[in-house]
Length: 392
Image 1 (cartoon, rainbow, N blue to C red):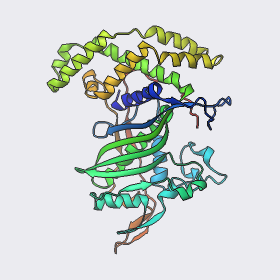
Image 2 (cartoon, rainbow, N blue to C red; image 1 turned 90 degrees about the vertical axis):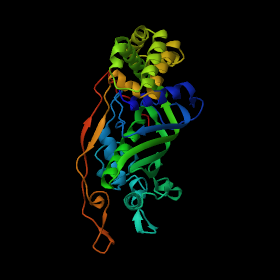
Image 3 (cartoon, rainbow, N blue to C red; image 1 turned 60 degrees about the vertical axis):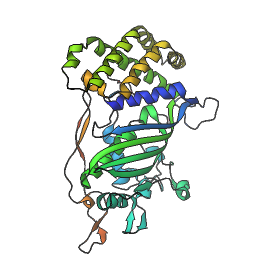
């Protein structure tokens, strides 16, 4: 597992524990059977990812990372608002007969404004200052433009990017108004982490930190069983690892003594709270097999599990791992990494429809290319293979 896995689970479980339900309210989304899709939500979900440690892609369930990165490039590189320029179908339902999603996303990115250095669109402005004036404090891109909202197929979810350069590293603060946390909680983190990698490469910098701020982080009612399944599965995996782990093994590691001591305390505490999760998982699986006949019974059962001691213990284990990423190293988990396909010397060759001529003026640029070469996913542990429904 990676730290991103634990952050993902810690966030979803926090929503289940502290979230406010909209069950008594009228909601827009519906499930395929016409049932209103209600959610529990928390205000201000705040997570931090250090890209020097890992590429934050979860292994708990499949994230279509190529499609996520492709969508990011559709918006910020192609600067398009037409689904015919996109290699997935995630925006089909929001497009008109011509494929346009209106004045949203790419349409806002490519709008030109006047800056002290000249007339640039939002992405070109960010790149210019990252490369030429990294101490600039206004490297801000904003997609939530009120006067254009009525012309958008959907209001932007990720609407604001704030860039910073510190010690030669690009940091990014992501502002997001709403997030379907189980289905898309990792999607936005993956795509904007990839953007930081790309910008760092072309601007002669290093990837730094990504901070993901979500105002309304929510979980749909029918997603609860998936969270319960993932939480118990990972808690079991960690318990087994701890049982197999010998003190002599940690003594051989070149670790800070404080880390070793903290890990032994963690191992001892978890052993005191040992819980046999197998029976509760078995009962859940039996209900899951019959969920097509009685989906409500399965959902109600999983909601009750969230309030049990066993689930609280499982969450405790997950939260320990989320708050102490160094424990992953001790338990022998690998870290996901992302590698970009080439070194781009001239940032305008692939990012911008403009380039500088011999006089330093911006002129039309030939279309460039940029892609992801390799991804090394986490291969350890129990895989979450069920398909998660998404209620838009």
